[in-house]
Image (cartoon, rainbow, N blue to C red; front, side, top):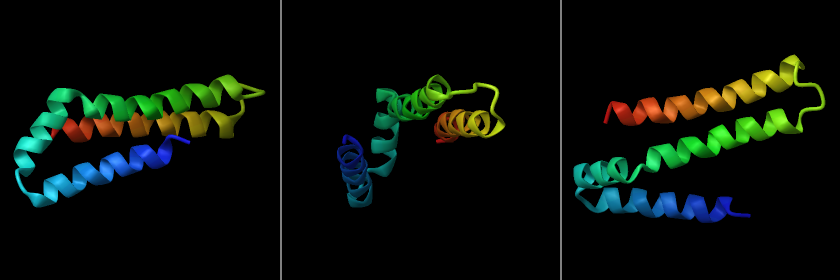
Length: 82
């Protein structure tokens, strides 16, 4: 239910960057920890997949959870380079 609101907020940020001050906005996002919050969504999803798993040793379930955790790490690494 909150995904559309989150997408709208990110689209507003993208629009603000397009209008100018991209470096200032990106630095403000970094300072606010937006990347950590966004990565936290993937971390929470990864944890939830494992909690909901009937068999925590099921390869497909673990692969899905691992992919979500890697996505979180990728978000964090992307912001390190900015």
